[in-house]
Image (tube, rainbow, N blue to C red):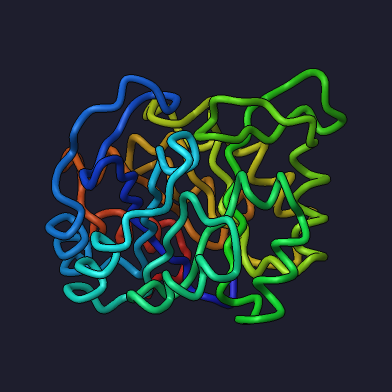
Length: 253
C-alpha cells in the first residue's frame, strides 16, 4: 500500500454528547465531544469523524456549535455528518471548521445532492457515509439503511457505492450495521467487496474490539480504519492501534 493507513476515531453525537450503543441501539453516554476530540488528537489520530446520529431521525440540523468548539481545539481533519441535506448545509459546516462532510440519508433520497456538493466544493470534501447490513434480497447480499440504521432502503450496497463514486463522492465510509458496537471485528467481506468496485478511498467502520482486528480490515482493502467504543472506553489508544498496524507490515502516519 503506497499511502499510509489512517486511524480515525469516531464521535457519535446526540444532544451534544458522545454516545455509543450496539447496532445503533441502547445508546449510552460516552463523554464530551470536545474533550474526547482533543484526547484523540494528542494520541495521534489522523482524522476525526463526527456524526450526529439523531439529526436525521429528529429531522434537524447538525449541532454547529459543537462542531465549532471541536474545530477550535483540534487541528487535524474533521469530517462531520448527520442531517446534511443541501450544499448550503455543507457551506455552513465548512464555515464552522469542518474539513469534510459526510452525507447519507439525504443522498439516498436525492442522489443529485452528491454531484451538487462535489461540483461546488470538490470531491475531496464529500464523504459518502453508508450504514450497511446483510440482506438476502440484494444481489450483493448487502443493503443500505437510512435514519441511523432504522430503515432499510431498496438499494444494493455495492450498486449504490458505484453510483455515488460516479456522481462525485470522494471517499466511502462503510459502516457495518451487523458488526457495529459488537467488538467482534470488521466485516471483512463487505470491505473487500466495496474495495473491488471503488476508485476512491474506503474507510472500514463497525466492529473493532481488539488490536488484532485492524490489520485484516486493511488487508481486505480499507484505506482507513474507524472505531469508537474501543477509544471511548480506553480499551486502547490510537497509538496502540497504529503500532499494531505497523507491526503487521502496513505504513502508518
